[in-house]
Length: 124
Image (cartoon, rainbow, N blue to C red):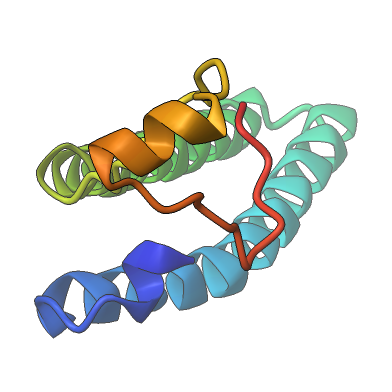
């Protein structure tokens, strides 16, 4: 969420949203197309036209191979962009553990005022 809210390069975010839209559109399209090709191949096998059935099966395999290749390349690209952003935009919080309390006589000698915490933060 921090990466999406980051006012950095908008091109990367547009590419991500474009790929998500394509994924949501292409996934059902590829599924239905593959199912129709396989269904047609089964019908062609029943009518003994094995060449058309083999062509439809090859088309289905090519369709899913290209779909999976595009999905993997797109996913790896966006993961690489995210990891690069995360490496360059780390959010570091320094948590100093509470030390042993200094007696009030030593505090007055050192000129220290007792610290009061206004927030309820938990040290992890």
